[in-house]
Image (cartoon, rainbow, N blue to C red; front, top):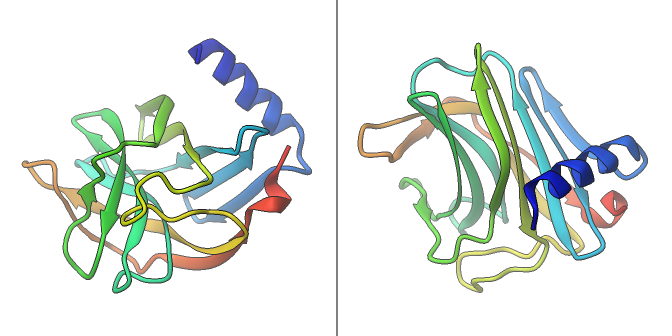
Amino acid sequence: MNVVFLIFLFAAILTESDAICRYTNGQYDLSWVVDHSDNVHFQLIYRNFPRLNAWTGVAFGQSMGAGLDAVIVKVINGKVIVSDEYVRGYSPSQPDYSQDTRLQTAEYNQGTLKARFTRPVSAVESVVDHSLKGCTPWHFITGPGIVYGNGGGGKHTRHPVIQIICLDQCRI
């Protein structure tokens, strides 16, 4: 899809306030909508993001023990990277073979991280992806973790906030 079209689409979506869903906690602000093609459009704004290489994001699923599907947003040397990952237990997350999360725009400027990305509502890889249909647990990663020199992520600095999110109320 054309990047300009997607930016226009997301801007138009954000003006339809009834369809916007949002979670805000301190400096972490994540909003999302679901389009007619069953894609979820996210906008993450994180103010006062650490100046060191760090990561944040959002994860989907019951628990780390059961396995979580995660969208990880990293800032490495000022560059923003978005990755579709999976984590089980308390080991670092691993990138999925099928990267079904798509970065639209991203910037890190004067301590503010902004990223717009999409992912499908339905699971692509049955083992590591979780469907977002209906009402599902979302884990908002409000406490960034460090990114090591090898690109791997350390533990988040706060327990993620878990909420049940029902995507049908976020449709445009």
